[in-house]
Amino acid sequence: MVWDVSYTCDICGKKKGESNHWWMLLLGDVPCYDEGQPHQAFTILPWNSAESRNPEMRHLCGQNCAMKALERFMTTHNVDRELAEAD
Ligand SMILES: [Zn+2]
Image (cartoon, rainbow, N blue to C red; front, side, top):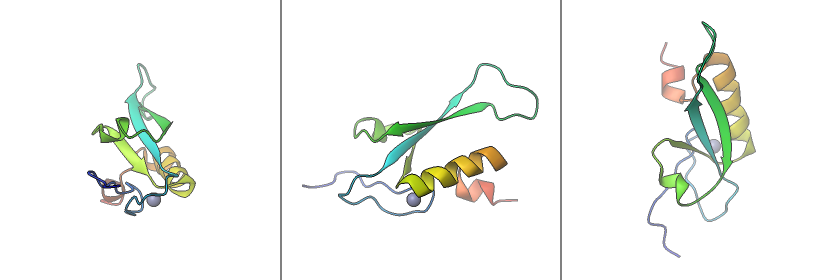
C-alpha cells in the first residue's frame, strides 16, 4: 500500500503510519457567543480518508493529542502550537 498523502499530527508533529487511531478535529464557527468567549466549536471526528484532505481539518494522532488540543482550546482558545506559544 502506497500513501499518496502523508499526515502529521497537528499537536505533537508525529507522522501518520499505517496504524489508525487517528482522529480529525474541526473548529467550526458558532452563530452567537458572549464577549470574551471562544467563537468556535470544537468537534472531534472519526478519521476518514476523504475528509482528512479537507484543509480545514486538523489531524490528531490519538486520544492524548485530542485531550491536549481540547485543553489548549479551552485555555487559550487556540489549538495551534506555534500560534498558542507565540506570545
Ligand atoms: Zn499527536
